Image 1 (cartoon, helix red, strand yellow):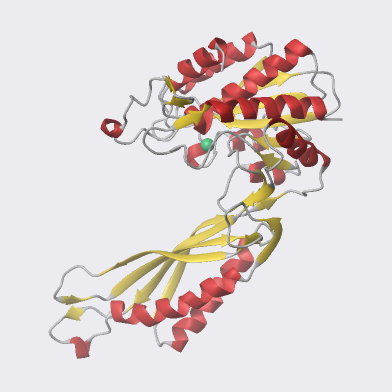
Image 2 (image 1 turned 180 degrees about the vertical axis):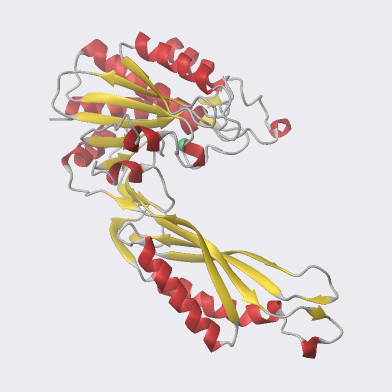
Length: 393
Ligand SMILES: [Zn+2]
Protein backbone atom coordinates (compact mmCIF):
# COMPACT_ATOMS: atom_id res chain seq x y z
CA UNK A 1 0.00 0.00 0.00
CA UNK A 2 1.63 3.26 -1.09
CA UNK A 3 1.17 6.65 0.53
CA UNK A 4 -1.68 7.68 -1.81
CA UNK A 5 -3.61 4.53 -0.94
CA UNK A 6 -2.90 4.83 2.78
CA UNK A 7 -3.98 8.48 2.84
CA UNK A 8 -7.16 7.58 0.96
CA UNK A 9 -7.96 4.77 3.40
CA UNK A 10 -7.13 6.94 6.41
CA UNK A 11 -9.43 9.74 5.31
CA UNK A 12 -12.42 7.45 4.87
CA UNK A 13 -11.81 5.27 7.95
CA UNK A 14 -11.62 8.41 10.11
CA UNK A 15 -15.24 9.19 9.15
CA UNK A 16 -17.71 7.10 11.16
CA UNK A 17 -20.23 6.10 8.48
CA UNK A 18 -22.25 3.57 10.47
CA UNK A 19 -25.51 2.80 8.72
CA UNK A 20 -27.53 2.86 11.97
CA UNK A 21 -27.00 6.62 12.29
CA UNK A 22 -26.15 7.32 8.60
CA UNK A 23 -23.56 9.85 9.70
CA UNK A 24 -20.87 11.42 7.50
CA UNK A 25 -22.30 9.92 4.31
CA UNK A 26 -21.86 13.15 2.31
CA UNK A 27 -18.39 13.85 3.72
CA UNK A 28 -17.24 10.32 2.96
CA UNK A 29 -18.49 10.34 -0.63
CA UNK A 30 -16.79 13.71 -1.18
CA UNK A 31 -13.46 12.17 -0.18
CA UNK A 32 -14.06 9.07 -2.32
CA UNK A 33 -15.09 11.22 -5.30
CA UNK A 34 -11.95 13.32 -4.96
CA UNK A 35 -9.65 10.26 -4.96
CA UNK A 36 -11.57 8.68 -7.86
CA UNK A 37 -11.09 11.83 -9.93
CA UNK A 38 -7.44 11.95 -8.95
CA UNK A 39 -7.13 8.36 -10.22
CA UNK A 40 -8.56 9.45 -13.58
CA UNK A 41 -12.08 8.08 -13.14
CA UNK A 42 -15.26 9.85 -14.21
CA UNK A 43 -17.44 10.31 -11.14
CA UNK A 44 -21.20 10.62 -10.91
CA UNK A 45 -23.16 10.87 -7.67
CA UNK A 46 -26.67 9.44 -7.34
CA UNK A 47 -28.21 10.60 -4.11
CA UNK A 48 -31.11 8.41 -3.05
CA UNK A 49 -31.99 10.99 -0.39
CA UNK A 50 -34.61 9.47 1.86
CA UNK A 51 -36.28 10.52 5.12
CA UNK A 52 -34.43 13.83 4.81
CA UNK A 53 -31.05 12.11 4.93
CA UNK A 54 -28.60 12.38 2.06
CA UNK A 55 -27.57 8.91 0.93
CA UNK A 56 -25.15 9.44 -1.95
CA UNK A 57 -24.10 6.55 -4.18
CA UNK A 58 -20.97 6.94 -6.29
CA UNK A 59 -20.45 5.47 -9.74
CA UNK A 60 -16.81 5.88 -10.84
CA UNK A 61 -16.17 5.00 -14.46
CA UNK A 62 -13.11 3.84 -16.33
CA UNK A 63 -13.89 4.06 -20.04
CA UNK A 64 -11.36 2.10 -22.04
CA UNK A 65 -13.52 1.97 -25.16
CA UNK A 66 -14.06 -1.78 -24.69
CA UNK A 67 -17.30 -3.56 -25.57
CA UNK A 68 -17.90 -5.01 -22.11
CA UNK A 69 -18.46 -3.24 -18.81
CA UNK A 70 -17.65 -4.70 -15.41
CA UNK A 71 -19.45 -3.56 -12.27
CA UNK A 72 -17.44 -3.57 -9.05
CA UNK A 73 -19.65 -3.55 -5.97
CA UNK A 74 -18.39 -1.95 -2.74
CA UNK A 75 -19.90 0.01 0.16
CA UNK A 76 -18.75 2.84 2.40
CA UNK A 77 -21.12 2.33 5.33
CA UNK A 78 -19.87 0.34 8.33
CA UNK A 79 -21.42 -1.38 11.32
CA UNK A 80 -21.15 0.64 14.58
CA UNK A 81 -17.85 0.32 16.45
CA UNK A 82 -19.67 -1.26 19.41
CA UNK A 83 -17.95 -0.91 22.76
CA UNK A 84 -15.14 1.50 21.86
CA UNK A 85 -13.48 0.87 25.24
CA UNK A 86 -12.77 -2.68 24.17
CA UNK A 87 -10.84 -1.63 21.04
CA UNK A 88 -7.07 -1.85 21.50
CA UNK A 89 -6.75 1.11 19.09
CA UNK A 90 -9.41 3.80 18.50
CA UNK A 91 -11.80 2.44 15.80
CA UNK A 92 -11.83 5.62 13.72
CA UNK A 93 -8.07 6.11 13.54
CA UNK A 94 -6.00 4.20 11.03
CA UNK A 95 -3.14 2.17 12.45
CA UNK A 96 -0.71 0.24 10.25
CA UNK A 97 1.16 -2.43 12.20
CA UNK A 98 2.82 -5.75 11.34
CA UNK A 99 1.25 -6.19 7.92
CA UNK A 100 -2.23 -5.21 9.13
CA UNK A 101 -4.28 -2.03 8.99
CA UNK A 102 -6.61 -1.56 11.98
CA UNK A 103 -9.83 0.44 12.15
CA UNK A 104 -13.60 0.07 11.66
CA UNK A 105 -14.28 -0.60 8.00
CA UNK A 106 -10.65 -1.23 7.00
CA UNK A 107 -11.57 -4.57 5.47
CA UNK A 108 -15.39 -4.30 5.33
CA UNK A 109 -15.45 -2.51 3.02
CA UNK A 110 -13.33 0.63 2.78
CA UNK A 111 -10.08 -1.22 2.00
CA UNK A 112 -11.88 -2.81 -0.94
CA UNK A 113 -12.95 0.64 -2.21
CA UNK A 114 -9.31 1.77 -2.14
CA UNK A 115 -8.19 -1.48 -3.83
CA UNK A 116 -10.68 -0.91 -6.70
CA UNK A 117 -9.81 2.75 -7.21
CA UNK A 118 -6.09 2.07 -6.97
CA UNK A 119 -6.36 -0.83 -9.46
CA UNK A 120 -8.26 1.46 -11.83
CA UNK A 121 -5.57 4.12 -11.44
CA UNK A 122 -2.91 1.56 -12.40
CA UNK A 123 -4.93 0.35 -15.42
CA UNK A 124 -5.41 3.94 -16.59
CA UNK A 125 -1.67 4.62 -16.25
CA UNK A 126 -0.86 1.47 -18.22
CA UNK A 127 -3.71 1.98 -20.69
CA UNK A 128 -4.15 -1.77 -20.50
CA UNK A 129 -7.75 -2.51 -19.46
CA UNK A 130 -9.69 -4.71 -21.90
CA UNK A 131 -12.99 -3.85 -20.19
CA UNK A 132 -14.75 -0.71 -18.99
CA UNK A 133 -15.31 -0.35 -15.29
CA UNK A 134 -18.07 1.06 -13.15
CA UNK A 135 -17.06 1.10 -9.50
CA UNK A 136 -20.22 1.26 -7.40
CA UNK A 137 -19.70 2.70 -3.93
CA UNK A 138 -22.92 2.59 -1.92
CA UNK A 139 -24.28 3.27 1.55
CA UNK A 140 -26.57 1.00 3.59
CA UNK A 141 -25.04 -2.37 2.64
CA UNK A 142 -24.90 -3.36 6.30
CA UNK A 143 -28.66 -2.83 6.62
CA UNK A 144 -29.72 -4.63 3.45
CA UNK A 145 -28.82 -2.26 0.60
CA UNK A 146 -32.04 -0.24 0.35
CA UNK A 147 -31.27 3.28 -1.03
CA UNK A 148 -27.79 1.89 -1.73
CA UNK A 149 -26.99 -0.81 -4.26
CA UNK A 150 -30.70 -1.57 -4.67
CA UNK A 151 -31.25 2.06 -5.72
CA UNK A 152 -28.37 1.98 -8.23
CA UNK A 153 -29.62 -1.20 -9.90
CA UNK A 154 -33.41 -0.97 -9.56
CA UNK A 155 -33.94 2.76 -9.01
CA UNK A 156 -33.64 5.60 -11.57
CA UNK A 157 -29.86 5.20 -12.20
CA UNK A 158 -30.57 1.63 -13.50
CA UNK A 159 -26.88 0.77 -13.66
CA UNK A 160 -26.13 -2.18 -15.93
CA UNK A 161 -23.04 -4.12 -16.96
CA UNK A 162 -21.95 -7.40 -18.51
CA UNK A 163 -20.46 -8.87 -15.36
CA UNK A 164 -20.37 -7.91 -11.67
CA UNK A 165 -17.70 -8.51 -9.07
CA UNK A 166 -18.88 -8.11 -5.48
CA UNK A 167 -15.61 -6.92 -3.94
CA UNK A 168 -17.37 -6.88 -0.56
CA UNK A 169 -16.25 -10.47 -0.02
CA UNK A 170 -13.48 -12.77 1.18
CA UNK A 171 -10.13 -13.92 -0.24
CA UNK A 172 -10.23 -17.69 0.33
CA UNK A 173 -12.39 -18.60 -2.67
CA UNK A 174 -14.09 -17.04 -5.67
CA UNK A 175 -17.75 -17.11 -4.75
CA UNK A 176 -20.31 -17.60 -7.51
CA UNK A 177 -23.44 -17.92 -5.41
CA UNK A 178 -24.99 -17.63 -1.99
CA UNK A 179 -27.62 -19.32 0.13
CA UNK A 180 -31.14 -18.03 0.51
CA UNK A 181 -32.67 -17.49 3.95
CA UNK A 182 -36.06 -18.20 5.49
CA UNK A 183 -36.39 -17.26 9.12
CA UNK A 184 -39.34 -17.08 11.46
CA UNK A 185 -40.96 -18.07 14.71
CA UNK A 186 -43.13 -21.01 15.75
CA UNK A 187 -45.52 -20.33 18.63
CA UNK A 188 -46.40 -23.24 20.89
CA UNK A 189 -49.79 -22.62 22.47
CA UNK A 190 -50.57 -23.97 25.93
CA UNK A 191 -52.56 -22.61 28.86
CA UNK A 192 -51.18 -20.46 31.64
CA UNK A 193 -51.83 -21.11 35.33
CA UNK A 194 -50.61 -21.59 38.89
CA UNK A 195 -47.67 -23.99 39.12
CA UNK A 196 -49.29 -25.65 42.16
CA UNK A 197 -51.96 -27.08 39.82
CA UNK A 198 -50.04 -28.50 36.85
CA UNK A 199 -52.85 -31.01 36.10
CA UNK A 200 -55.15 -28.09 35.22
CA UNK A 201 -52.96 -26.46 32.54
CA UNK A 202 -51.10 -27.24 29.34
CA UNK A 203 -47.48 -26.29 29.98
CA UNK A 204 -46.04 -24.71 26.80
CA UNK A 205 -42.47 -25.66 27.76
CA UNK A 206 -43.41 -29.29 28.27
CA UNK A 207 -45.26 -29.25 24.94
CA UNK A 208 -42.21 -27.75 23.23
CA UNK A 209 -39.90 -30.63 24.08
CA UNK A 210 -41.47 -33.31 21.87
CA UNK A 211 -42.18 -30.72 19.17
CA UNK A 212 -38.52 -29.60 19.07
CA UNK A 213 -37.54 -33.23 18.87
CA UNK A 214 -39.81 -33.65 15.82
CA UNK A 215 -38.35 -30.49 14.25
CA UNK A 216 -34.86 -32.02 14.46
CA UNK A 217 -36.21 -34.26 11.72
CA UNK A 218 -36.53 -31.20 9.53
CA UNK A 219 -32.79 -30.50 9.97
CA UNK A 220 -32.16 -34.02 8.63
CA UNK A 221 -34.51 -33.42 5.72
CA UNK A 222 -32.80 -30.15 4.77
CA UNK A 223 -29.32 -31.69 4.96
CA UNK A 224 -30.22 -33.99 2.05
CA UNK A 225 -30.92 -31.05 -0.31
CA UNK A 226 -27.88 -30.53 -2.53
CA UNK A 227 -26.99 -27.69 -4.90
CA UNK A 228 -24.99 -28.07 -8.09
CA UNK A 229 -22.69 -25.30 -6.78
CA UNK A 230 -19.61 -26.27 -4.77
CA UNK A 231 -19.50 -25.64 -0.99
CA UNK A 232 -16.71 -23.46 0.45
CA UNK A 233 -13.48 -24.98 1.81
CA UNK A 234 -13.92 -26.51 5.27
CA UNK A 235 -17.53 -27.61 4.64
CA UNK A 236 -18.69 -31.11 5.61
CA UNK A 237 -20.14 -31.61 2.11
CA UNK A 238 -18.80 -31.08 -1.40
CA UNK A 239 -21.78 -29.07 -2.61
CA UNK A 240 -23.86 -26.36 -1.00
CA UNK A 241 -26.64 -27.99 1.01
CA UNK A 242 -29.89 -27.09 2.80
CA UNK A 243 -29.81 -26.27 6.51
CA UNK A 244 -32.37 -25.79 9.27
CA UNK A 245 -31.48 -24.60 12.78
CA UNK A 246 -33.59 -23.76 15.80
CA UNK A 247 -31.92 -20.56 16.98
CA UNK A 248 -33.98 -18.99 19.79
CA UNK A 249 -36.37 -20.19 22.46
CA UNK A 250 -38.44 -18.03 24.79
CA UNK A 251 -41.00 -19.07 27.38
CA UNK A 252 -42.17 -18.38 30.91
CA UNK A 253 -42.12 -15.37 33.19
CA UNK A 254 -42.02 -16.60 36.81
CA UNK A 255 -41.01 -19.81 38.57
CA UNK A 256 -44.52 -20.36 39.95
CA UNK A 257 -46.42 -19.83 36.70
CA UNK A 258 -47.07 -22.58 34.17
CA UNK A 259 -46.23 -20.89 30.86
CA UNK A 260 -49.09 -20.63 28.40
CA UNK A 261 -46.94 -19.80 25.41
CA UNK A 262 -43.48 -20.60 24.04
CA UNK A 263 -41.72 -19.16 21.01
CA UNK A 264 -39.23 -21.12 18.97
CA UNK A 265 -37.37 -19.25 16.24
CA UNK A 266 -35.54 -20.86 13.35
CA UNK A 267 -33.19 -20.10 10.49
CA UNK A 268 -33.45 -22.14 7.31
CA UNK A 269 -30.77 -21.83 4.59
CA UNK A 270 -31.77 -22.48 1.02
CA UNK A 271 -29.63 -23.55 -1.91
CA UNK A 272 -29.73 -21.04 -4.81
CA UNK A 273 -31.93 -23.38 -6.87
CA UNK A 274 -34.73 -23.25 -4.29
CA UNK A 275 -37.58 -20.76 -4.25
CA UNK A 276 -38.30 -19.44 -0.74
CA UNK A 277 -42.06 -19.72 -1.46
CA UNK A 278 -41.81 -23.49 -1.98
CA UNK A 279 -39.72 -24.04 1.13
CA UNK A 280 -42.07 -21.89 3.19
CA UNK A 281 -44.88 -24.28 2.22
CA UNK A 282 -42.64 -27.26 3.01
CA UNK A 283 -41.85 -25.94 6.51
CA UNK A 284 -45.54 -25.23 7.15
CA UNK A 285 -46.64 -28.72 6.17
CA UNK A 286 -43.79 -30.39 8.10
CA UNK A 287 -44.75 -28.37 11.19
CA UNK A 288 -48.42 -29.25 10.78
CA UNK A 289 -47.61 -32.96 10.71
CA UNK A 290 -45.14 -32.67 13.59
CA UNK A 291 -47.66 -30.74 15.70
CA UNK A 292 -50.32 -33.37 15.05
CA UNK A 293 -47.93 -36.21 15.88
CA UNK A 294 -47.20 -34.82 19.36
CA UNK A 295 -50.67 -33.26 19.96
CA UNK A 296 -49.42 -29.65 20.14
CA UNK A 297 -51.21 -26.54 18.90
CA UNK A 298 -48.81 -24.31 16.95
CA UNK A 299 -48.71 -21.22 14.73
CA UNK A 300 -45.93 -20.11 12.44
CA UNK A 301 -44.81 -16.71 11.20
CA UNK A 302 -42.10 -16.02 8.62
CA UNK A 303 -40.02 -12.87 9.10
CA UNK A 304 -37.15 -13.17 6.60
CA UNK A 305 -37.46 -14.41 3.01
CA UNK A 306 -34.35 -14.03 0.86
CA UNK A 307 -33.70 -15.71 -2.43
CA UNK A 308 -30.25 -17.24 -2.91
CA UNK A 309 -28.40 -16.71 -6.17
CA UNK A 310 -25.94 -18.54 -8.35
CA UNK A 311 -23.94 -17.92 -11.53
CA UNK A 312 -22.81 -20.44 -14.12
CA UNK A 313 -19.24 -21.62 -13.30
CA UNK A 314 -18.65 -21.92 -17.07
CA UNK A 315 -19.40 -18.22 -17.70
CA UNK A 316 -16.31 -16.77 -19.48
CA UNK A 317 -15.99 -13.81 -17.08
CA UNK A 318 -16.08 -16.15 -14.10
CA UNK A 319 -13.43 -18.36 -15.69
CA UNK A 320 -11.27 -15.28 -16.35
CA UNK A 321 -11.71 -14.01 -12.78
CA UNK A 322 -10.77 -17.42 -11.40
CA UNK A 323 -7.72 -17.54 -13.73
CA UNK A 324 -6.76 -14.02 -12.56
CA UNK A 325 -6.99 -15.07 -8.89
CA UNK A 326 -4.94 -18.19 -9.60
CA UNK A 327 -2.37 -16.06 -11.40
CA UNK A 328 -2.22 -13.06 -9.05
CA UNK A 329 -2.74 -14.84 -5.70
CA UNK A 330 -2.52 -18.65 -5.66
CA UNK A 331 -3.37 -21.59 -7.89
CA UNK A 332 -4.99 -23.26 -4.87
CA UNK A 333 -7.96 -20.89 -4.59
CA UNK A 334 -11.18 -22.65 -5.64
CA UNK A 335 -14.57 -21.58 -6.95
CA UNK A 336 -17.33 -22.04 -4.31
CA UNK A 337 -20.65 -20.66 -3.20
CA UNK A 338 -21.36 -18.95 0.14
CA UNK A 339 -23.09 -20.53 3.13
CA UNK A 340 -24.26 -17.06 4.12
CA UNK A 341 -25.93 -14.48 1.92
CA UNK A 342 -24.52 -11.50 0.04
CA UNK A 343 -25.38 -8.76 -2.46
CA UNK A 344 -24.85 -10.81 -5.60
CA UNK A 345 -28.62 -11.27 -5.94
CA UNK A 346 -29.05 -7.59 -6.86
CA UNK A 347 -27.09 -8.29 -10.05
CA UNK A 348 -28.21 -11.82 -10.91
CA UNK A 349 -31.86 -10.84 -10.46
CA UNK A 350 -31.47 -8.45 -13.43
CA UNK A 351 -29.51 -11.03 -15.44
CA UNK A 352 -25.92 -9.91 -14.75
CA UNK A 353 -23.58 -12.88 -14.08
CA UNK A 354 -21.78 -12.28 -10.80
CA UNK A 355 -18.82 -13.46 -8.73
CA UNK A 356 -17.33 -12.29 -5.44
CA UNK A 357 -13.74 -11.78 -4.38
CA UNK A 358 -12.32 -9.30 -1.85
CA UNK A 359 -10.19 -8.73 1.24
CA UNK A 360 -12.63 -9.70 4.02
CA UNK A 361 -10.84 -12.64 5.68
CA UNK A 362 -12.75 -14.84 8.14
CA UNK A 363 -10.41 -13.91 11.01
CA UNK A 364 -10.32 -10.15 10.32
CA UNK A 365 -12.82 -9.27 13.11
CA UNK A 366 -15.09 -7.57 10.58
CA UNK A 367 -18.17 -6.33 12.47
CA UNK A 368 -16.16 -7.04 15.68
CA UNK A 369 -13.62 -5.34 17.91
CA UNK A 370 -10.22 -4.40 16.37
CA UNK A 371 -11.23 -5.00 12.74
CA UNK A 372 -8.19 -5.28 10.49
CA UNK A 373 -7.23 -5.51 6.85
CA UNK A 374 -4.35 -7.72 5.78
CA UNK A 375 -1.97 -5.74 3.56
CA UNK A 376 -1.15 -8.95 1.68
CA UNK A 377 -4.85 -9.57 0.93
CA UNK A 378 -5.20 -5.94 -0.10
CA UNK A 379 -2.40 -6.28 -2.66
CA UNK A 380 -3.83 -9.62 -3.83
CA UNK A 381 -7.27 -8.16 -4.49
CA UNK A 382 -5.84 -5.12 -6.27
CA UNK A 383 -3.56 -7.30 -8.43
CA UNK A 384 -6.43 -9.69 -9.18
CA UNK A 385 -8.58 -6.82 -10.47
CA UNK A 386 -5.74 -5.51 -12.64
CA UNK A 387 -4.89 -8.99 -13.99
CA UNK A 388 -8.55 -9.76 -14.64
CA UNK A 389 -9.07 -6.56 -16.63
CA UNK A 390 -5.97 -7.22 -18.72
CA UNK A 391 -6.96 -10.87 -19.32
CA UNK A 392 -10.53 -10.17 -20.48
CA UNK A 393 -11.27 -10.55 -24.17
ZN1 LIG B 1 -19.49 -5.55 3.72
